[in-house]
Image 1 (tube, rainbow, N blue to C red):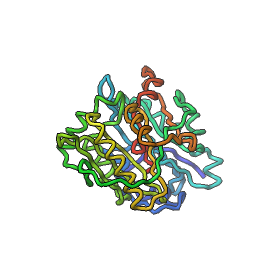
Image 2: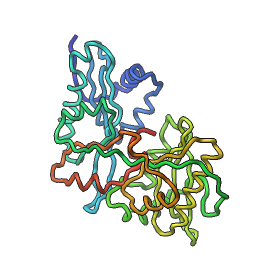
Image 3: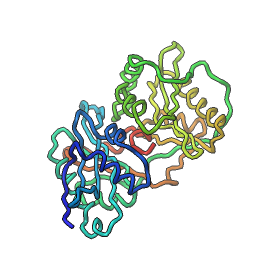
Image 4: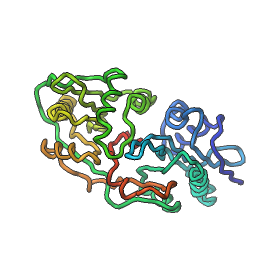
Length: 318
């Protein structure tokens, strides 16, 4: 069997998803692949195919904009990676060859400063083959709280406000975060509202004492756990974010969830509020950590790791 590693072509979508579904027992379709990876008609995707053009491996990423003190950075988030469980794939080192080709092309892309992700233990070994790689043993900070009852609060409402209001909140909030994914309406719409395979996100938002939108949270229940997928807060009124978090706890009680969980680091003030409200740090209960491939080697990757605002929405895990 001959094996060819090449970039994505427009006629690959069906075979890519068919191979992905076969590997992982899922039922995603081409809509999911297009939503996640096909941006402006282009895809950062590499595959290995055999003589019959069967897709054996797949590695792709999608573009993300990070806001930094030095302006916007274009980065990429590593998405679905898979390899069919076949002897020829293993013996032909198909996944390693796909990784090598993908990173070789990404390094030549002047628009992409780095690739980041939260790989599994298996994929971490493959990532180690591509240098320079920046990572650490410290896991992503995981917070948890038990469901609890609290009365409804007039500062908190369900749903998401309109585009102009969300964008205005992002502009007020952006300077609170030293380094963060751009959380404006365009990103919220793509990341949550347009996602084709998830229809059960829950949206809450909170106002300050002047009636101005102060923050929002996006939730999803998975296996009896209510996850805070993402949260944005402008820092102007502590009661607004406290009320929002308390309503999340009450909602978890209504839904009979076992706990509330969230990833959150890079916002020290919010961390202090979580601790004050009784949230506990369960970071050592999981092994998820951030890895970054340095395409722009002039960047301070230690500073990036310490500064980056991270929630579960910065991954593709929920």
